[in-house]
Length: 490
Image 1 (tube, one colour):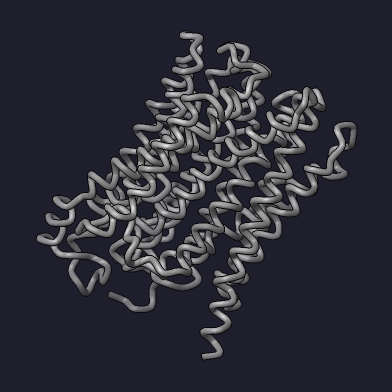
Image 2 (cartoon, rainbow, N blue to C red):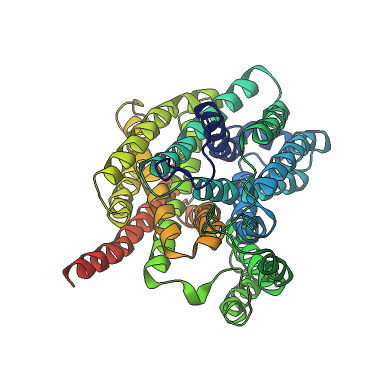
C-alpha cells in the first residue's frame, strides 16, 4: 500500500471520499436536528399532548438524550463486534422508523407514547454516532486529513441544530408538527442509500495485518463476540436510565416523592456495582482497568460542559418563546449564527491542531466559551434587543461545542487500544448526550425550587446552574493540561 496517502485502507477516489464524508457529517446533522425537534416545537406538541407549561415537557429532549447517551456504551462495542459499517446503515433504518412513529403519536394524544418514540430515536442516534466516529478512525491515518475529518464532523452539530430548529419552526408555522418527524424519516431513508454507496466495506476484523494494523484475527473475532459483556450492559444501561429518570422526574414529582427516591437509589446502586463487574469480565463494556487518569478527567470535563450546553439551549428557546412571546420559527431564526460560528470554530480547531497545540489545551480553552454563553443568558433582561446578549451567546457558545468535541475525541482515541476505537468514540458520545439530559433534570429541579411563581426567576436559576457546571468543567480541564506540562519537563 502506498505509504503517502492518508488512508488506512486502499486509496479512495476524491469523489467517493467526499460522498463518504458528506454522509458521515450528516450523522451529526440529523442527530442534532433530532434534539432540536424536541425543543423548538415544544409548545405546539404540548398543546396536542396536554403538557404545555408543565416541566413534564422536559421529556421531549430528555428522553432523546437519555437513550442516546445510555445506549452508546453497548453500541460502540456492538460496532466493534459486527462491523461499524453494517451497524451504521442499520441505525439509519432504525432512525427512519422511529421518526415515523414519533409523528404518529399525534393521533394517540399521548405524551407517554411520544416520549417513548423519542427514546427510540435516541437509540438510533446511540448507534449512529460511535459508528460514524469509528469509521473515520479506521479509514484515516493520524494527520491533517484525519483532524479535518473530525472537525467537519463536529461542525455538523451547530448546522444540524440550526436546520432542525428552522425546519421545525417552518413546519409548525405553516403545517402540522408531525411532519417534522416524517420529513426526518424520509431524510434518513436517503442516507441509507448514501451509506451503502459511499462507505467502503472495512471488514475491521478480517483485514491482512499489513493492510490494517488495528484488526484482529477471525478466531479472536469469534471470542470477542462470545464474550460480549451482557451483565455489564444490563447493569450499566439500567443504572444510567434509572438515575436519569430520577433527575427528570424530580422537577414534576419532587425529590420527596417515593417514585423519585426509589428510582435514584436503585440507579446509584447499579452504577456503583458497574465498575466491579467490568473489572472481572474478559471483554468489558468499558475497559475501566485500562483507562488512565487523564481519560477520566476528559470524560468528567465533557460531562460538565455539555450538561451546561443542554441547559443553555433548552432554556434560551423557552426564554424567547415564553418570556419574549416569539414563535418557534423566530426562536430558530435567532439560532442561525450558531451554524456560521460553528464552522469558524471547526476551522479554528483544525488550525490549532495543525500548529501543534495539544488537544488537552484546546479542550480547556473550549470550556471558557460555555461559561461565557451561560453568563450572557443568566444576566439577560426579558425586554432587550436580541443583538445585545442573545446574539453573542449564540456566536460564542459554538466555540465551546466545536472545540471540545473533536479535541476530546482525539484525546480518547489516543488513550485506548486501536481495536477499541468504537469504545473510545462511544464513551465520549455517551457522556455528551447523556449529560445533556441530566443537565436538564438538574436545571429543572433548580427552576422549580427558585421560581416562586416567576418564570424569569426560574429561568435565571437554570442558567446559573449552567454557569456552575461549565465552571466546574473548566477547573477539571486544567489537570490534563498541567499533567502534559509536567510530562514535558520530565
